[in-house]
Image (cartoon, rainbow, N blue to C red; front, side, top):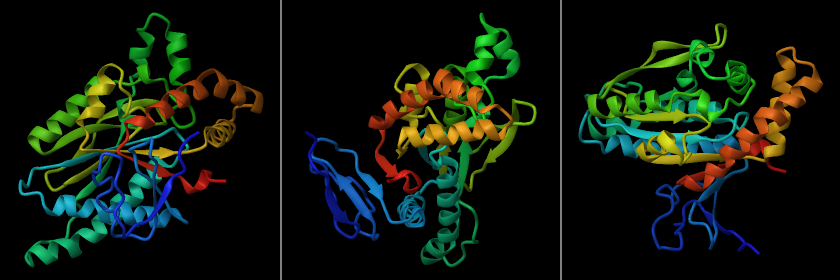
Amino acid sequence: MAASPFFFNIWKECKDSSGRDSLSFAKRFRMKVFCSQKKEIPTVSARCMDDVYDALAKHLVPTAAVASNPNSKYILGLAGPPGAGKSTLASEVVQRVNKLWPQKASSFDSQVEPMDIAIVLPMDGFHLYRSQLDAMENPEEAHARRGEPFCDISAPWTFNPELLLTCLKDLREQGSVYVPSFDHGIGDPVEDDIFVSLQHKVVIVEGNYLLLEEGVWGDVSSFFDEKWFIDVDIGAVMERVVKRHISTGRPPDVARWRVEYNDRPNAELIMKSKKNADLIIKSIDFQT
């Protein structure tokens, strides 16, 4: 039987079984951190997601403020299954970091101009092109397993983790990089559509498979300075994915077949990577 979680107020310090600080922001904010005797991964929850967004942003701002090298980057990986709220969380945290930064910067240097120092880097742009799927041994299977990225959970081998890793290395070494986005209208990536500039100190990379251990995905995962995972009820996520399918015009029976054939196996694989996170975030939308 699993040990019951210990509840900590955020202004108290939460330590894992090794005695290390399990959350550097655990002293500051009124929310709950759950630490299990068997698990060393802290889990953050709150009564509303706005409290979570606020706390995570306040945690990230000091990491940017103490950076001595103007080109230095704090690169964070945010993973979780589709429908868990990754894009929303990344966007909300980035907005808050950028809002807080002028206040933080002014306390160090009154001459600092307010600027955006945080940006989201979505993994969607690193889908394989349709032409690359066409060239595979079984193109029909390849297209089926990628599906429509808006509503389907694409299989990990329908992405290009090598390109993602190259972009992250370039970002670390050069301080700036152009990365692709994804055009849902044409179903293909758009090259050099997102620019991460020298002024961006916090980069949140968000995507399904960022914490996998297999192959190049493992190299991608080990590249991050910090790793977050949004934990959800997989049954609730699958119902949300079914609704996404139906919203695109698929009949309900086809939508449910897609979920069982493609989406659920991929989501289960994603959920297994939770153990590689530094922080687990409980999504309020899926709590019962």
